[in-house]
Image (tube, rainbow, N blue to C red):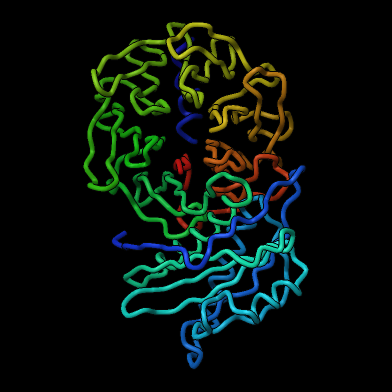
Length: 446
């Protein structure tokens, strides 16, 4: 591969709290009936959330805010179809939210599932109680009480997210994603730094703060740290950032181009691309022994490794066939096979947490750079995003449940972070706002 083509390839790639809480159950736990023979979304009605002081004028506003957050969480889950219905919120001074009057309302609604609750204070703490009624099984209710402080909007949102995840878990058996995070790169004052935000785009806050480039973040499997490429002295090093302490550690020193790092599923190995010999190859680094193993030796640009969920294979990008395409190899570098054949540019692969799909950037004739997904055996292939050529989609990252992708796109001129269902059937949701450039998102584990 010529140095010009290699640098062009790399350029395209690069363009790319102090709250404590607890919760407890109240009343008898009743597991809602959720076994269904199809994948139809479950109709749910959010009855409303009452405020903590029946005399306060602001209570209805906070109740409406809670209902809005919950409705958005349930809609994003793809498990529930949220119904639009009028509701009369409860008052906090009623005896628990499982009152006879409320159950009567829930039964009369005719909805498959009804959820409601109330919010208030208990001394310095915030208290939220949430209930649900299952019309299909006629289970009276299931309820949770969440207590924590100090009282902040972030704490309130956390409580609502917990309840949304509880409902998703009871109907699917899988954890919800409402409490996950997304790390991304944002351009501020000439530098590109790492930011983290809630999965719905709320509360972005910086993790790094300098005028240099900090790019391509990835989460550790335990969610306690991040790895990323940092530009230092005209070279690139791979750095680990421990989120609790803010301490950083250089894992791969800045002696050459070191990019696109990825943790193995067990967190013991680091896969990354390095160009110490002029062209980039895939390497692994044992984080305990510091043993470095070169996996690819082709005279081409090999980069963007992504591990299979079982850690036995790695998918990556290579232009060894003349154009960037997606390849799969065993974790020791053997058994290399080409996966994509349609189109002249397929790159930035990301293996789904369930192992059934690989998302990647595909160049579609007349449409430009979009997102596609392909099965690991190459037998099934689908286009996820669409739109005019001017809208360039890049850097897909999977939600932990495999139902969504987060990615960057220039669909509104500047690069922003978006979320989309993996089937692409609904419009993408923009998560970032303002700023000049937001890219390279990575969705946290559960």
